[in-house]
Image (cartoon, rainbow, N blue to C red):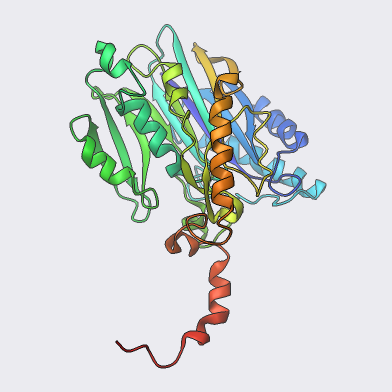
Length: 363
């Protein structure tokens, strides 16, 4: 069995929240290189986030793997502090590691499976958005035949997939089968402020996809930055083809995040080199990295959105960004009141609270 672990954290960036400094990537690489239990690894980045793609045989939530990632992130945060980078150690919400990174700030998406003779895997990295940004693309990949023609044409996909949906407010998880319970699935995951796709599997139990669903604001109790989720997806031979996985991002749908985590904006697929959000700290970005696995070793990566075929999508994203920005501090550019509770707005409302005291309006 091989485990693919993708862990991420914002440990400092420049200028502001735009880009990870090369020194941080080098520091993380040097820490991972000392490991004697990783089969392989790659250090990637998206916007202001450092992303670790690691393979091993220790299974999900392994203390050794999460501990190594924690050490890499904390060491990089020290470098960020020495360089005076913005938000040094931002996603590290605790001073002590406690077995795995869950609840400590960094996000993680992991899958354990039996490696096939040819095992394509895609890893998606986001910046300036939240885990629900993956709800629509994953629905399209694994449940929408207008996106994934293999659901119609490939007998190995005909049995559909099981979606594990998490209520991020309560922590509860439900399993929903597609296509049998497709409308129930959409009733949940369309409410992106509450329900997130956590993982997907085949009916026989074979893992298909995993997402980091950690919500920083719910962990910290206040706004400390967006969650910037990651996802890992298996491809081909019983799973969506690589091209079907990337096609799911060809429509730049609106997601929550962008500037101060308080705005809606289009999710724009970009190359790793272009994952530097500088217009109003955005618009939100997604990077796709493609790998082949062989005996746990990573072959690649290939930068999947570094492709002129996505130029049109990027143009549409910027048209949507321009439209949304013209609303300024008005909704729908601004997120809903429920999400604004975890931004800096509550401090402003507290100052104005007494203004609302007095006689209530009568009908």
